[in-house]
Image: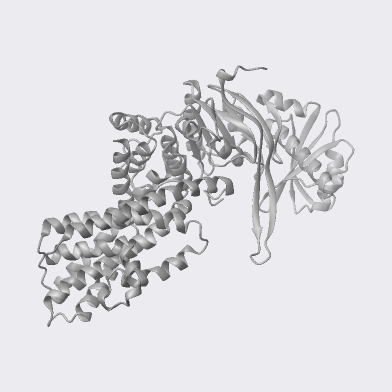
Amino acid sequence: MVIAMTDLAIKAEGLRRTYRSRNGWLKPSWRHTEAVRGISLEIERGELFGLLGPNGAGKTTTIKMLTTLLLPTSGSARVAGFDVVQDTREVRKRVGYVFGGDRGLYDRLSGLDNLRYFAELYAVPAREQRTRIAELLELVGLTGREREKVEGYSRGMRQRLHLARGLLHRPEVLFLDEPSIGVDPVGARELRRTVADLASSGTTVLLTTHYMAEAEELCGRIAVIADGAIQQIGTAEELKHRTDGRRVLTAEVFGASEADLDRIRLLPSVHGVTVEDRGLSQIVTVQSAVGTDIEPQVREALTGIRVGRIDKREPSLEDAYIAIVTGVDRDADERTGGTAGVPG
Amino acid sequence: MDTIRLLGTGVLLHAKQMSRSPLEIVISLVDPLVYATLAVYLFRAGDEPHAVIEAAIGAGMMAVWVSVLFGSGGAIQKQRFQGTLELLMLAPRRPVVCFLPITIATAVVGVYGLLATLLWGVVVFGMPLDIADPAAFVIAVVGVVASLGMMGLLLASLFIMLPNANALANTLSYPIWMLSGMLLSLSVLPGWTTPLSNALPTTWGARAVREAAEGGAVWPSLAAAVGLGLLCLAIGAVAMTRMERRARVAATLSLA
């Protein structure tokens, strides 16, 4: 799909970012880490675009380059039509940046004081400030709580205040970096509804998240980023094609070792195995070729291990994501000569 | 106009944020008592009542300097720790405009130390509080706040480039107290220190406040304090812009 430049909110070409860290003082040695390896991306105006990837994949680094907080090592990017390196201030006038977590607010001030301060910083005209702040407090459901100190806010309230702060200057492009992290399910649902409303009113949103359901529900298109590069891009349905011809088996097990999991990985029709620790138990997810009943072989591979409930189902977006990401990990390990690692 | 509004709102809210810190509250209660005690006993209140007010103002100015030194010196680090540094940098403003309210706020908080020192002197030690020209005193204090706030910006921009800025801040409190004539009279210092003293906004600021209290030519000293402060502001503004660029290259705006 070719999109005219004027319709693009974000256009990145070959963005790369290398971090340099020094070890030692007398004889310093420099370590270079390539966090982003040539990302190219086009996002239309008004689009709600998702960026999915494991920790350390390069999502936040990409966002920071697009918001001008980091200079790219090479490559170029334009946001709202302006170059992120040359036209820094023009880009900053047009973007909002909201990140998840507890930080980024003045805790000993009230929510209202925080918004007043950021309204001044982001040059919201004085005559508009009062109505704009009231409007945003209403939008994020903090009306009536705005005079309380932020240090007494719950995680969800803080996150909503962050969102209001990011929207004060009516940004054309809103970057949301894991905004629902640590927010309870009800709060997360309200946040999703607000984000969806923003996109429908014409704001371009770039969202990073770990929650597949959130990405699937909100995002028109999703890019899966791993190992510093975009591995796949498309709608949630298109990404799911990655798992065409596969079935998924999940097994609750107790005390499976890496050697037990390796036995499953070596089974002929298995495409991928992941494990999630849940305290005493582990949930093992096995992707296998459709038409093969893998259950007896899995049970045999886990002989001697206590196995609980076993379910079989069609692959989800999460399975597609895991298939993409584990494929990258395996390739990366083969490149570096290590053993195949599978994220938990 | 926008910038003036930002400076005003920023100073007010940062002063509010700083003065609500439990640590700040304890320091603000205890330090001025120590300074007032120093002032009274160093200058022997009973024999030289006039010298006591001079000493108390000097001691109060020590409190202002400590607030600026530690508050401004650590301003960027504190913002980084709070996660607000990136948001300040992301504002479509010059970095100097984003940070000046913070450093001025540290001087505003320091004025509390000055006033509390005087108050402790009066309440605990019965020090006579005779201010020769109250209006000039208020103007001089406002000028000193602006001047030291601008000096604080220079400190903030320089300290951010030093990994052990806190250690350096500790070593800078006594020398500036002495070189600025806060802790003792400049006449007792060796001659070679005079140019250093004259180059410091703190020297002229302390002198202006003292002259307003005792009766003297306030305005030349105040003008020198503000002028030197503006020089610090100009250097600090350039350093801040360079710092921002360096931070975007080195990825040091956030903790993560």
